[in-house]
Length: 220
Image (cartoon, rainbow, N blue to C red):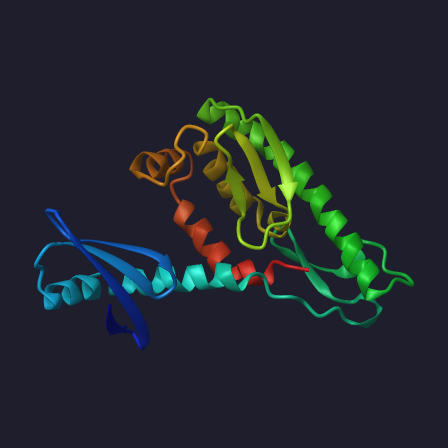
C-alpha cells in the first residue's frame, strides 16, 4: 500500500503484482485505487502513473462520494411553503399538491406519491421514441426509490428508474432513459456502450454533470 497526495486529497493505492505486460488502475471506493502492475515494477513508476491520472481519480472519487452520501434531506417550511423541483423548475409546494391542514409527514408522503406518478407518466411518454431509435424493447419498466442509482437494467431487460428523475429537466431524464436502453445490448460500460449512447445524445456528459452537481438537491 502506498499513499499519494493529489490536489489536497489523500489517495491510497493497493498494489497487485503479477504476470502482466503493463500497469493499470481501477477504483472501487472514493480515493482508493488498485494498481495491477508487472512483477518488479518500481514504486516510483507506479506513483507517476497515479499522478498522471490524478485529476480523473479526484473527479471520479467526488462523484462516488456523492452517491455514497445519498440525497440531501430537505426541511419543510411551515404551512407548506417549501420549494421543490419539477422537471427542472422550482415550484412552491402548494403548486404541486394540496397542503391545507397536513402534517409534515403527510406532506412528504403525498409529495412522494406525486413524484412517482409524474415520473411514471413522463418516462412512459418519452421512452417510446428512444426504443424505436435504438431498436430495443424492455421487458418491463418500474419506478423505484433508490438512494444510489438513477436507473438500472437487469440481465432480463427489466428497467427501473428513480422517481427523483421527475425533479430533473426532461433532457436529463432522456439521458437516463437512453443510458438504460443501451444496456439492453451492452451490459458493461465499454466503448461500444458509450458510442451507442453518444450516437443518440452527443452531449450526454453534460447530463451526467447535471446529475453530479444537482443530485443531492433532488430530494424530498
